Length: 602
Image 1 (cartoon, rainbow, N blue to C red):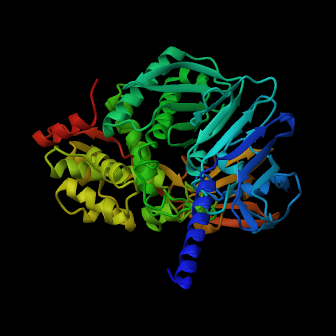
Image 2 (cartoon, helix red, strand yellow):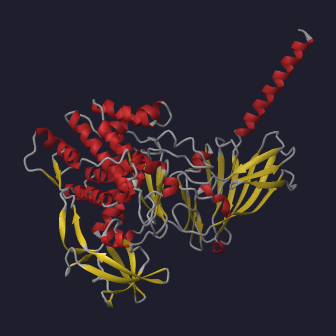
């Protein structure tokens, strides 16, 4: 062999050896120990240890957001007392770069030993929290990853406060090691919250041989046997839609009273107060909420838009398809409860009446499409910009399920009730999650829907990408239903003002867009001093004033930013649509079959 050729081969072998060495190192787990010795300080202490490659620098990153909650949270802002050492205990220099990266000058060190604190300030389902009674860890806000090494495995040891006895998570436990959990990569770790404290666990149940746990903090007093029986029915009904259960175990983590929930691959965190289960209407809301979060382990975690994985942990992962992930999950809430025998057909119809009423009374429906609402959630929030005086946004939680319903009815009608939206969801699950191991694109979602329907779905997708008014009557008729969309005049004179008495002052809480008061310049936060020279009350400035008629004029003196203004309002009329939904009296054979299959009677 010639000398040049020999050196070329030697160089290739060295590069290959270095690559294999780096690969082997990258398979070494990143180890974390998280402790909470003084929970009254609301601070987790974290120790991180990991092997690193030959480069003289390393960058650690903390995500700016957490999967399931589509808002930039800037978790790195809570990190303090950061310290870096090598395997011999020598201090390493570091510099924070940007919002969420720490750049470490490690020299020849092969191991990094990092310590830091995470201060918790807000008790919320989307943020970590620690107090004297419990701890809740959102891993994306507590654990760093090495830049570009998101696929490394991780091991987490939890050291509970000395007075606590439990920790619960969807992560796999390490056999023979207490409070020790493992994740095959950081995507899994960041999707697996941890609850710590003196927790209560309800008797587990199995569906298709797979265990389902419900464990929580401050769950309250309620009929736990009945609740778990209902929960089992929900899991059975939801899993029957897809026909497969993809996890080895599932854990419901109840983090205490409050609001909100976040879905995960094989767990969900929910705020929960068992006392609400004692009131029938509140019970239905609790079960619906849990159903939504559970169904997400299919719809968004596995049946997902292609943008939602791999994630961009620095900037967020924008998609036009949250109306599918969130909106269609809302659509399935009452359907699953109905199929589980927990919701009557009347309650099912009322659930969609409520959605239609809420959506159709928002001016944003004339300005923002479903696709736009999905993409702009990072700036607008999941429910739109509710703080705006004139809200030109919508919530995909409201329009999304309605469009999902119209899509379902269209498919059932076109296929003579042989196919439904269930078939679309199953196909997406089987084709993209199981076979291709990826999410679906917007065009693929439409292609699958049209293939199942056997026809084009132009109008349905106009409802997604434009602000075209929904044709409720046509689509509801497919299912043997009628919906009352006829405007009806409300008696009395209409002002458009909504107010409340606060500290002896009448505060305007909101003003209906384009109402007489809106046109006259009255806005939220104004203080009404008097009306027509008399003292202002929430009756004589009400949205509807019974003892006046359209065309009457009223004069208000209001405070706007501490300045008195006189406002002249010409009262008008208000028309409302009820959106009452009921079965039609004489359905044809197909309508009757669709309604019977869609909304069970019991």
